[in-house]
Amino acid sequence: MRVLLFLLPFLVFTACEANTAESTAEETPVAEATSPFADRIAAAENRLQKSTASQLILAAINAHGGLEKWYAQSPLYYRFNYRPTEKDKTIRDSYILNDYVNARAVHQSADQEGMSYGFDGKEAWKLPADADLSVNARFWSLTPYYFVGLPFVLADEGIFFEQIEDADWEGTSYHRVKVTYGEGIGDADQDYYILWLHPETKQMDALNYIVSYSGFFPNGGHLPEKFMVLNGKTTVDGITLPTGYTTRWSDKPTEVITNITVSDYSFKPDTADEAFDKPAAASIVE
Image (tube, rainbow, N blue to C red; front, side):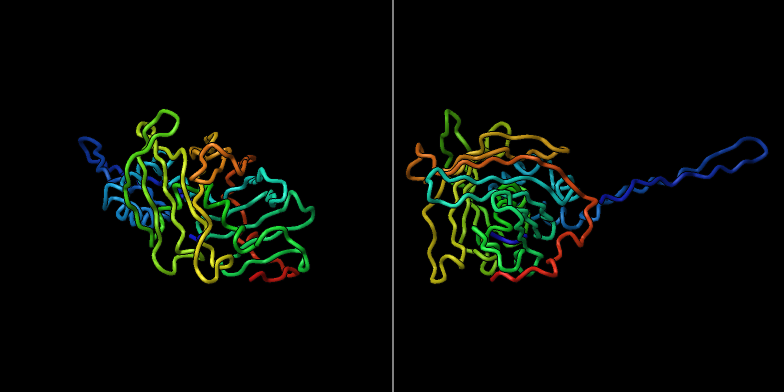
């Protein structure tokens, strides 16, 4: 998967000048508060206004809470518990702190006690240095955040949108938008996603996707397409987030292959930047 404070409002008060007959006040215009992310948000909204497909994505972002609240409240803490239905497949269960503004993450493993791993924006790492992780730290550090962060993560540059034909799921005809990436965007620029957007709520209820991560497919290629359905949502500090998913192969939509639960959400904007540094005793993961 790819790697992508509000200023306090202030008022300028008018000064009153008195004369011998009466006091008059000349009003000074009130300066509007600005977000440190204002330019980033304006650029994203400009990009997302350019086609019908991208306008559907912008509507979904706004329906989930909007970019101002999303950027202002980073990082996000949560537990992501990924459980395949086949017994020989790897469980991936961790408590995650994601700085999604700068694409950084720290995982505390829930299924491998005492182990942690993450991505500091440049390098993936693991701790203890000789830990035998059950996951690929570079691939998995940012993967949960990408799913949890949809559709917000689609505000980044280098992303292309195509509206494809509507399709039915459980009695509702959904708008669908295919998402692809420019060359060199992230570790898997051959990935694609198809978002299923509810025609009334505008929110994302399901998606198709492929995994083309070059670490798994050094000569090109990808896993077969999957179909992921959100099976619950919650609103935290104005942002609507998934509480779980069921995943199927797209050509076998009745057969569940993975159950995922997401819990313990909390935005932590006061987190120190050093929280995302690679620990001194950690080792680099390629």
